[in-house]
Image 1 (cartoon, one colour):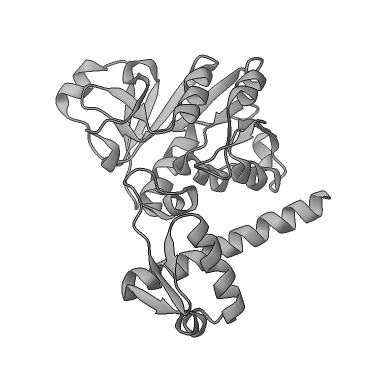
Image 2: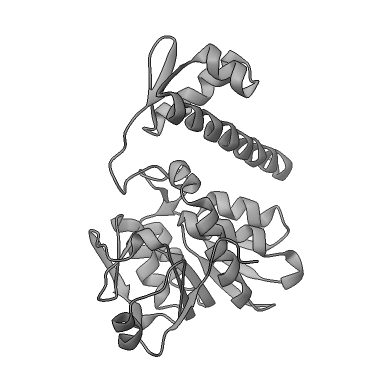
Length: 269
């Protein structure tokens, strides 16, 4: 496949993502909707609606029947990538926008596979002359389309997140990669400052790159604080910056005085 074909395919997927978001919004409002109703509401042909519903069903987001579909509940914390990409979008963008201001021209970055970091492509440009590594194939495409020098980490496609690579081959490639700054997020940050995540293989990738980054930037949403998850990633004391959309408790601030804590808001520009 040529580069132009790859870019066109990626562009089509982003268009589909926007359309699927509209479908999910309507299903959330109605509970159940027919193909004809969705087609007329979004001004898309019934055949396209059926294809979108098939894709959404494969992600575990909707439950189809002969004439339409309804939302399909997902296990908390285990929603598919494209579903999580839509969650708390304004909060994520505010956090990553502020964090992106740390990026210096000619620097080397590692961007993790989280939907939070996914938004960073909006705030970087080819003029910065960056070199970027990531195991998020969708993010790699968006960066490359902006003429940014980008390396997509190889490896097995994640069973949980179809745009992410992980596993032993990915770790092997990362052995020789060292970066100036790593941007990452996770599923949980306890009140004691322990950072946890839900996926074993993605946690292994993040943990490995924390040892290969000169500066570590952790991005944390309000709904992740005070929670735990299955796999321990690191301690908040091992990072240099934490960007969040909330104010940390006094005891947390006092426990990590050397960590720069940055609170942002949705309206911050």
